[in-house]
Image 1 (cartoon, helix red, strand yellow):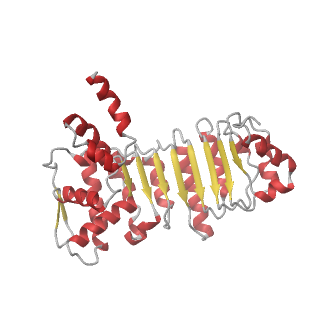
Image 2 (cartoon, rainbow, N blue to C red):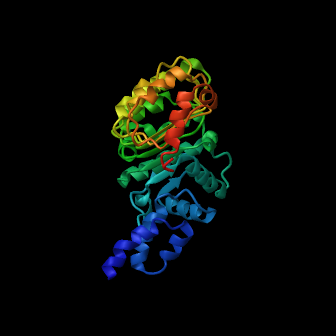
Image 3 (tube, rainbow, N blue to C red):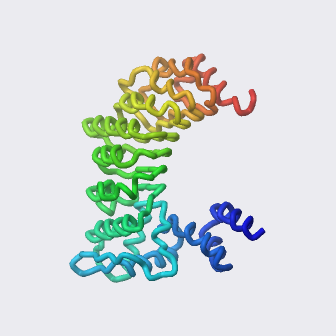
Length: 329
């Protein structure tokens, strides 16, 4: 029975909130050993108190000098090597936590030091053979400086990011170089969301080409979401057949399909379960027509621009049929 309990606890604990996990860690050593890695898997979320504990642990490994140089010790002296449990990093939450830490030290204008601290933190993770599973860049990191947002795709962090399966890039900065580096360093992504955020047509074309290269480099992409792509959607569409055997959901949000040919390459993705065109424009009946003939046996949800549904009965009937499958209608 004790062994059965030990086997079941991780399954139960993974659905608990941080506060509850903290309570479980205090029950006994066995529960503590199970709960602590889950608490530290995503260390930059939660209360100020939790973040402060993280920075106290981190400060025992990083000595910050007035000259901005940072010295990294090899190992922590705490009961657990907490940082070795990290699997998830949200760059926005991480920078916010570092800023709180600097403010507590009464360091004015910490912006120039944030990149150094971020790099040192990643160096520590590399030294512990950490392999990230999830990485997010959010809008809130604009104070970090757009020039610094690509530091994590340096080749020296290849061992850290090569295992990422969930990747979300939602911030306004040039993404061309990052996408190319990711194509070489990170090919196990299953869930990918990217916000383009650009109006310069030259940059958009280059970004979409590099996005296509990234898509083709993946071994088994399952969920793809592209947001605010103001043109050159054809580059992304042409890359989709490379993921035809694994892609389950695809969504385009606020995307301009001007100049895009028929969506025949999208029709190859026969395992799709969800297909959304939300708030898209310059998409027409001719583009969508190949989808009506595609073998989407598992497709359960589809969203097509309203004006197309109102003016094309065949597409409307097809969309209605797909969306009513689960209800048996």
